[in-house]
Amino acid sequence: MSGEVPKASRESRVQLGQMLVIGGIASVLGIVLALLIDWFPVAGSTQAGPIDTLWDVLLIVSVPIFVLVTTIILYSAIRFRMRPGEELMDGPPIHGNTKLEVIWTAIPAVILVALCTYAYVVLVDIEKAQANSMEVRVVGEQFTWTFFYPGEGDEELASPQLYLPAETAVNFTIQSKDVIHDFFVPAFRMKVDAVPGIDTHLRVTTTDRLDEYPVVCAELCGLGHSTMRQTAHVVSQEDYDAWFEELSSGEAAGGAGGGDSETAASTDGKELFASAAQPTACGSCHTLADAGTTGTTGPNLDEVVPDRDEAQLRQSITEPDAEVAEGFSPGLMPRYGESLSEEQVDALVDYLTEVSGK
Ligand code: CUA
Image (cartoon, rainbow, N blue to C red):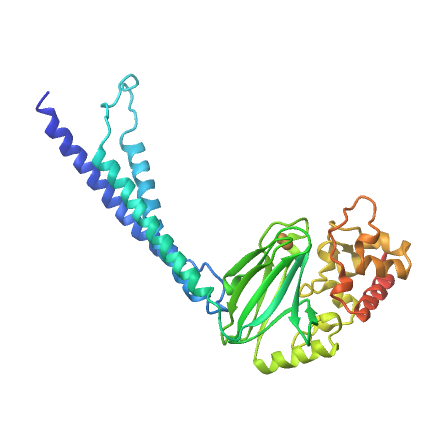
């Protein structure tokens, strides 16, 4: 029996070596693969850089651990599987290995503490208050975002679109009217929950990149969650000033911002109905043959509109919960009286009256 021991230990050392070699190769391949994947959209804020770097570091550290553990499991399952005739055999008894246990507790602990410290430092750094930051209040509701800009005195100007000047620090205050939403602009890499009853905050500094980025809701908030999308326009300071001028002069009544977005200030009923850039993406919830939409979250407009007069239609758009069609839930449709101008509501009513049921 004593002659068996060196042979067995030599064999297990060979097995360990094989596992480490396979694990090492797999780790390198895993890291290369993970870093090759384009995880994020284009970066639109100064916060994006540190966050993308943090992400890459997390990948570099965690991929080898995952690959190593998986390799050992797969190797062991194949190499030490039960063979015919071994059904009643048992492996050698193991009584624990203090050295090994200390090592596999200490290494993950050190890695975790290091990564948490790094992530904390990054977070504190990107959330640092900036001098001269502009304030924007963001209000979420089922299923739209509205952006409020400080006007003269205590006045606030509402806009269904987010406009920001380039290279500007923005301090967002996020609120919710109903359920929990989550304000997220993927290009900015920053997101935070909009919680009823409390204010949450987010700091973003735009880069010199002039572009349009999607604003999304990142918290399941009801049937229309996926339609809770708007656009963040990062424009030059001149364009921003022009847009803000328009917003405050009331030209873009109700806050439907102008700028370079034609549909935002549109008074064309069909355009308003269909435009996904607007919070009035009506078709995502309503069926209307003329617009080619097939939404079923709200009533079929081809069926219900012909039975209603103009006043009822106007009320259904501006105060949808005043009277809810049978079989549908209140609180699902946003009150468009707050984000659309009277002209725009009229245009929608005219359009619906004209085309519904045809
Ligand atoms: Cu709001 Cu999801």
